[in-house]
Image 1 (tube, rainbow, N blue to C red):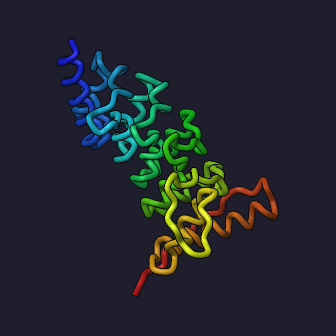
Image 2 (image 1 turned 60 degrees about the vertical axis):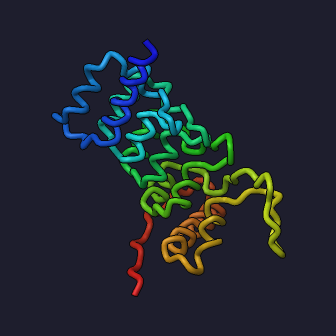
Length: 212
């Protein structure tokens, strides 16, 4: 029944978000045996989030693997804001989930239908340098642009006819934000490397310097 399915999905979401990903964890054992896991992998909760998105956000890689095995198509599902499981992994700084999702076929350059943000952009917005590095290492496009704002603000000397790149997002807040400054410097360096050699691979990210 609809009520039974809804209850099963709610339990499934809870298991995905709290799982410790231990091989013997009770929640993963439950998901392996669950007859509802296929339909629950992409089923959304009241906030529009699927169990796969929550598992990716929390870097619960065993849960992510189980959910993808049950429903491979769930990898492309998006929430109400157009964010996929990979984008949620980027928001959570979930490096291992990012790598697993990419290995299973997630498009690292997929753009959200609502705002055009990519996983790299979400990693920047969420202040997740490790996620930025992981996505760049996987070959994402640092020069992709989000969609321009529907109702742009009036800022003297600035045009909003085109959306920002991930580097521009970081640079806009770099002056007062050490993490954004670190990310902006890294993305700028990689952009310059790609300009000299389009086939260049992203370099490792330097350690974030301590702020006195």
